[in-house]
Image (cartoon, rainbow, N blue to C red):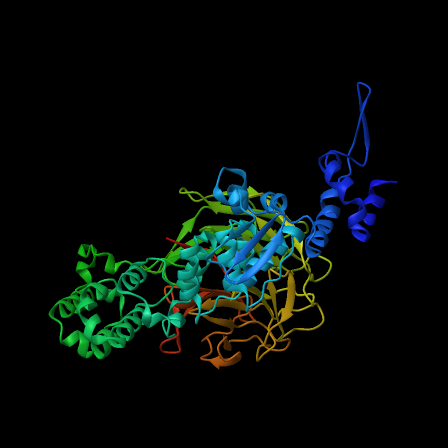
Length: 599
């Protein structure tokens, strides 16, 4: 009788073969599917034995056979086998393999775990499977952490990560800290930083303590305008003015008041009664007013309150990469703009010419992905990294791509669609910097070239584009956890060669081409209402436009107006719903890739 037949018989008739199975178990674990001859010895191993044996263990447990320990949780009892619990649950391994009282007891009581969670975790010990759902997740992660089942705990943490929202993020973060779930704490913290404005509107926010409030407002990486930071602080204080007002001066000092507009300082901050009634708060407001009244002395202001926050939406260096000359030739040129000075300056050129290049930021490094060198579509990639900001080549993509979109999410780069010189693509790839390798991911539903690609709401969004025949208004979004593409809410207009960016929790799409008209219209998607709406159009028609969020504004750079390539820049202020012209690029004439590198 072969071992496979033995296992099948065990499943069908566990009583008949139980004795032989127990006495020969450790011998079976050494057996192999192949015969290896060495000095006359033959080793035979069945490699799938653990997988076939554990279902038998579970069947034996269900029948109550050979169980030598009972786990008591509250008023529930669970029969099990010490050897299985030792082998699969670290908590019980420590309990049963050292000279503890419980190692000899028939009944062991475990406290601090929900009975239903314990039942699921014991079943996991026998089957290697567990179902996670909203009703059991809290008790399950507590139980897994208590029993030191780190893989189950991490699976529960991943479940939470995919369900973070503005209403629950603070609660989940606090819960994760008590369980020492470091990755979940970091994920919640990252979500909180990126969505602070929206989180501050929720009830959880006004219930945080003063130390957490101060720590949040102090962060350089907090994704919020200073107007938003001020309003969040005032809302928090007014939740319990009697006990919180005394903390207002130290908390207001964490808001970068000098970076507020003079209008907001005068009309909102100075007129707030909580500020008017506090001498120390008025001093901070006066400091901010001096910053605006004495611009020639700004270099003398050393306070951190004069330093912009440096998250991706607030403060960074704007890099224009590659692109085209007026004659339409591809460029390797790179220039960089500091939003504080408003000046463009030359930066180190790429190693090769790239127009229609994909650009993304990962770990504060700028990646130039694919593109067109004037002769061939490219699959090569280079990165501008290190303190000296020099370009170096990294692993190439699996196929050539120009006019592809790129974005980063969860420590990976993603590139979607594009054109390989023959056809528009629906294929996509992800890049892991730790392995320097690109790997294919699920293809999009449509072939899309010249689409907008951006990381938004824990998904990779792909907007518009064309397949060579049709231009799209449709939107697709990719979930890295499920590996699936789903349809998003379509835009109000068809657009290819558009610019896309995320600012303060909303998704913007601007410019492009709809098949008959070069566009200057702009629309915004609000995830709360799940609707697109028009905002003020740009001053200039822009196809092949690059869009980025920086310093609390949107920057529309370059493009093509139907007649000529553009080196002009427009800046959108969401507070006023107005576009204004910024400094024009010096070395480019449009068609650039654009990225913001935090400083």
